[in-house]
Amino acid sequence: MTPLPERAGRRCHNALNALHSALYFSPALGKELAPYGIDDPHAVNLATRSAPLGAVGAGTVTATFYNYSHALVARFVPEVWDAASPETVLAARLRAADSTLRHLLGEETVTCPQMAEAARLALRAAEGCTRSGRPLYAANADLPTPPVEQAPHLALWHAATLLREHRGDGHIAALQHAELNALEALVSHTASGHGMNPVWVMRTRGYNERDWAAAQSRLAERGLLGGDGELTEEGVALRKHLEEETDRLDRRPYELLGAEGVARLTELAGGFARTATEAGAFPADLRGKG
Image (cartoon, rainbow, N blue to C red; front, side, top):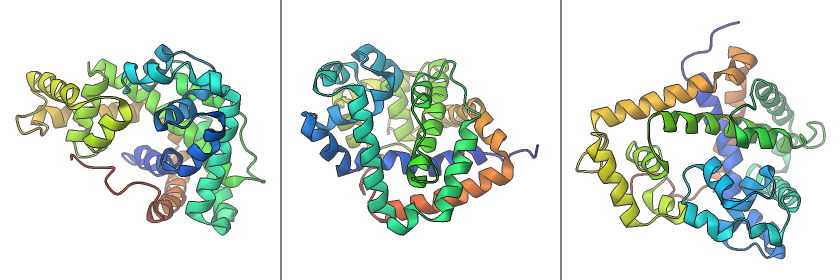
């Protein structure tokens, strides 16, 4: 087996994750769920991502999502399941993924040979994922895989979801080992310049400016954050270690695919992701330190 280049798996994941996460910013998702009475953006997001787990309560969603305020989650879960069953939400999610990718990539692209090639490569990589200790991955792995022959773009989206949640579950383990709680993880990630804008974090995760300031103070006490809100050398080193540890915990899918397969999947998924981004998949002010 040819060793993977450094961070090859991370680069591949980042390209695939852009295709997966575009759904959360798509108006198609809200349109699909509105007829069931699920129209609050928070409810749409929480129901969509947690539906593979079944009709779970707020505690399970907070635990598996990790960086959401439990108070926010509890406002909508489990009541959201009274409006629509997880099975109904999952069907709506797949319809929204279909229309979103067709809109962002174009009809010719979603059915092109390269889309099917990327789907097969991503599904092959997902065969290296493991269920133990990875609840969000495991729940999605129990869902049926859209057929590559009939819907290659949905097969790729499904595989991207599996790989995204597999890495995410491992990342949570790394965060807990580093003793970063939900908001401290978000604050330090934002301070690194790679996370969401604080305005987006507070709006979507259920925190306020007082919560944010308190987390900054705790990080400063640990020597991870300076008075200017920037990461210290120790903070930079910790964030680097967290990503490297996440890479280590997530290496099996990409080792299974092999260096050549990972490079090809990164090339294909990266091209699709750039097209989606240029088509307006993500808000212009999503990233940055604010």
